[in-house]
Every structure is written in structure tokens, then in C-alpha cells.
Image (cartoon, rainbow, N blue to C red; front, side, top):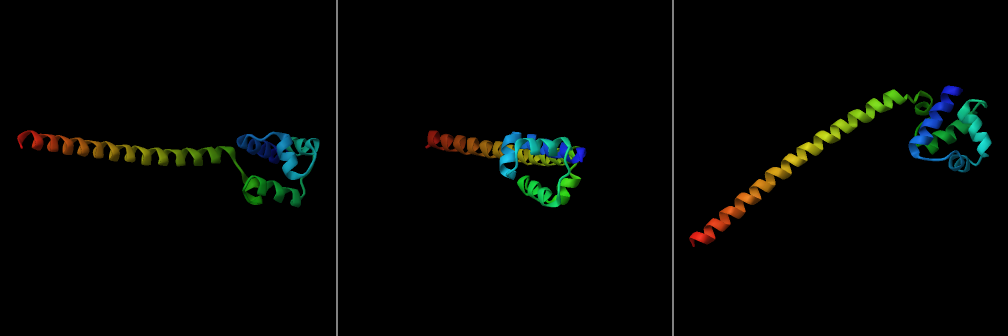
Length: 113
């Protein structure tokens, strides 16, 4: 149970929630929630489902949550988003060049007219 408690604590920290906030959302006392995080108390299925819903995941995801795996997934998603951003920046630069070229062309036509 200590491993599950550590996962729950990690998820709570990722959300930026205090033990008090989570305890209130679960409708339990702060000491009761603290015992869940430290692995002092066993979690029944009903409470496990409640915690999973709170963190927007399934019970299976909660039980199998792996910080390293999640970090790798996030890193991969971030890399993909960065690539898309760089592609968009290139498109913007190309469009800026076209606008400048058109502006110069119009200015040149006005001068010769």
C-alpha cells in the first residue's frame, strides 16, 4: 500500500492540491487521507474508485501509474508540440517574407507610375 500512497501523493502534488483539499473532496478527515498517502491504512475499492475519479483516471491507471512512464509520455508529447510550433514559426516567417516582397513590389510600381 505504501507504493499506492506514494502514487496518490505524487498525483496530488502534480495537481497542486493540499492534503486538506483532497480530504475535503473525498469527504474524509485530513488524518484519514494522510494515512492513505503514507500507506498506514488499506484502501477499499470504493475509496480507490473515488480517488481515481478525483484524479481523472481509471482504477487500473491509478494502480499502474508509473512516474517514469508518465514523464516519458509527456516528454514525447512536448517534443511533438515543439516540432509543430517550429513548423508554424517557419510558415509565419515565409508569410512575412511574402508580405515584404509584395509590399516592395507595390512600392516599386508606385514609384515607376
